[in-house]
Image (cartoon, rainbow over all chains, first blue to last red; front, side, top):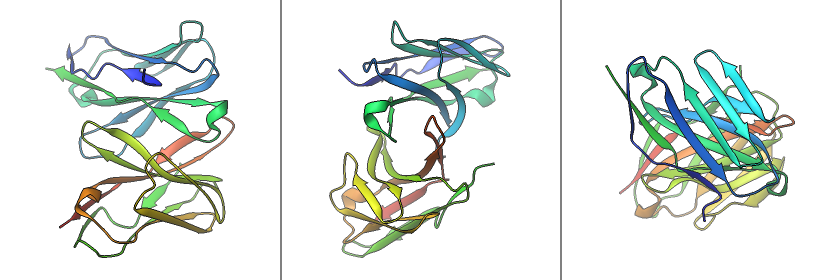
Length: 112
Length: 112
């Protein structure tokens, strides 16, 4: 079992709809959770971080963390074609020290 | 704003050449990382450094070495480039209580 798992997609979403991305992780000691957006040919860009159970909202993005169920999700409201990208989930565990463990990424396609 | 810069966006080298990739960050972060990213394989950690002159192997260190003589600068060295080292190389800088990582723009290396 991979340490951080994401559905590779593509997740096809109509413009204006909500895109829902999920990420599960295996280490119960995980403490910090991050979502990165990566456009084709570009480097990952941090869009959200979450550390406590519950929801965290930033503009059209909402991150949701459920440590008991070991998943973190990202919602993109009012999806735009510019949201078409690969979204990487990353997790930091105390055991890993300074390192992040990345999921394989979910490719999102927003269709006009 | 965090800024992580990499010395080259694109690089073409011949097999057997020594290759230097340099990364500079301006956030006074303790931690710096080198990853490579290949289609279908995701982000893989090559080396990281948690302090000046300190380094630790990541998941795929073979064929690579690193140098960190100053806190803001972390170099990746390919001692003798091979075609299987053709890849996108990403540097990241990390810090803070939650170990947030920020990526540079990446270097796309082609070894012929």
